[in-house]
Image (cartoon, rainbow, N blue to C red; front, side, top):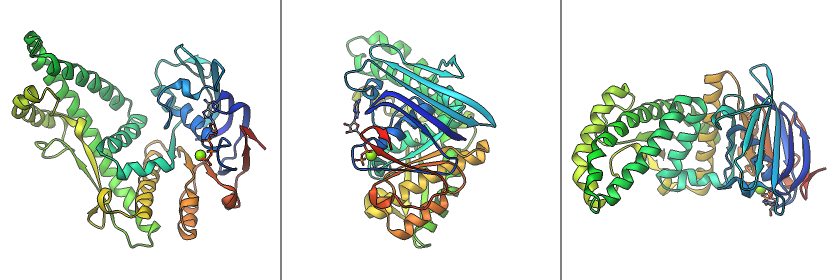
Length: 366
Ligand code: ATP
Ligand code: MG
């Protein structure tokens, strides 16, 4: 898929901008704080209605203005789509595809997918399990609408069960519904585990060769899916997993009531990332951490391509400045295939490209 054109009004520091991108590599360069990341953020928003660095949509609207418009012309599955997001302060956002209002953000992902890599992604390796779960969830949601629905339901159930556990001593009648919640959570949880296990399996085939190439064959990356301890085979059909989840719930029932917390279920899952057999989180160097995070993202991109026959648009924010020349050359070679928007500073603006170069200056494209 190709983002042919992006148009923004009052998005972050852009009053109005129109960019026509090339199908290959687009280099976006400029000084700090000019709007390079904002441009990638806008492209990513049109694929997911989410920003990697804004918690609320209102942060995306220009200071002192009450609305922001984003519009993208996307070529996907040999068809032309116009995607729009209209943000108004204090109102619900509107998402449109070819002028038709969308009901969910997930519908954007059926047309347009992006993979973003940014400096904050080091936390994918360094931070706690929540960060890696989010990575898995975001990627699988984009590929599998069924998973997105299950995840949404699981989160609602989790919140409700947490409330029961928090308040049961004051209101013992709440416990009457606990078994129903437990059963439904185990059913939906089994679906999540099944999907996650299959996704990690495929990622495990794609990411290690990338890390290997990156490091000149010196570093061996391995991935592992860690879930509820009673689950013997997370790739098994959800029906099998369900029994094992119920077993785990049963043995943790007392502890949950006493601690007043939800202790059993896949909301504590993790993706173990190891380099040469050691936990990357604990032992990887800066460079290895960066490379491992990038390998995961590039593997995701390849997995998307395998699944859908289309390359998602790759958004690389500030990736080159952090890498030595050999790794830079490797990135540029590896990303060959789909469309790429890559930001860099003045010094790296000459990276070779078959596409276009844009200079960003104070919220305008020069
Ligand atoms: P760097 O090279 O440092 O990463 P950048 O070019 O990527 O810089 P951006 O992160 O895109 O810079 O941000 C550019 C500017 O946008 C910042 O100065 C920031 O203050 C401004 N900005 C962010 N949000 C808004 C907003 N809602 N309204 C107006 N300006 C904003
Ligand atoms: Mg930036």
